[in-house]
Length: 60
Image (cartoon, rainbow, N blue to C red; front, side):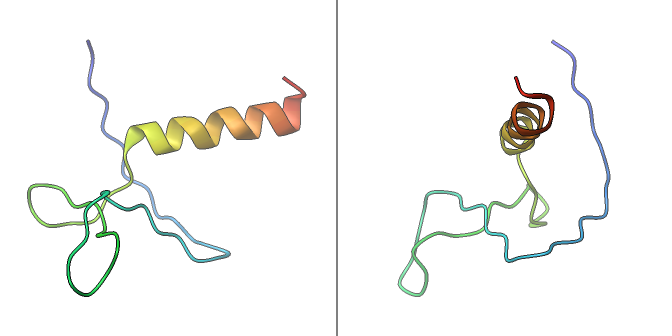
């Protein structure tokens, strides 16, 4: 299995929240963070986005 790393600047047109599925007393879903505490978007979320775009734009 290969691991690929990408860095990108994301500019949003609307709010984005990718939660970890865990919550606390203040919020119902915490933001996913890496081992350094930086927020990140999991590859599975990006894969879903790419599949959705292909389906919509290519008629798949």
